[in-house]
Image (cartoon, rainbow, N blue to C red; front, top):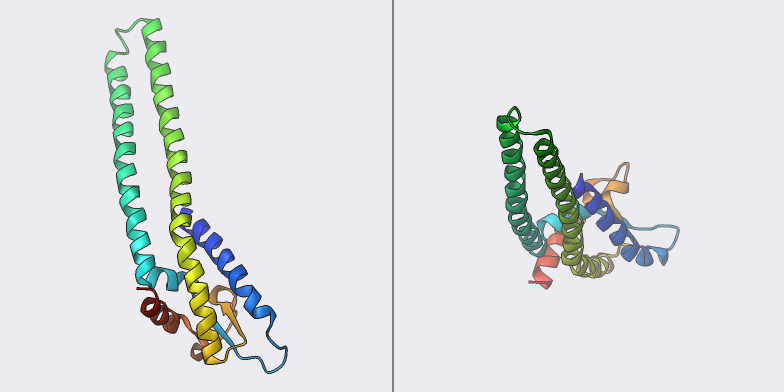
Length: 175
């Protein structure tokens, strides 16, 4: 779900950056193409490198969260073992400790999600700018008046798909 939200934000930014190009197109006899932005981002070398960086950071953070979960499970198991012999005051203290650890875990999860979204955006923003520039150049070279996102289409023939060409052009220009 996080990935879908993030890609939605990216696609919106991409639409706005390409939108200025589309506004100057004539209304009759327009030559229109489409691009699958998500596929292009995931396929270009820079997109793959950004994904690897994010995955590396996610794995590192996952280890920390797993440790926190293990600590919580240990507290819970210890409490169950000792529950019958603990005083009511000790039980309340252990329950409070358990609740605090769960809240800390939830807060850390939320913090990680927000930070990872910001990191993904930081890594992909320059990529999207370069991709938009490459797409504008490609569209002009091929004589297209407008390029739209594939997800916004109900139907289009494959011959108007610039995705693969954009990927090749981008990787060639931005090594």
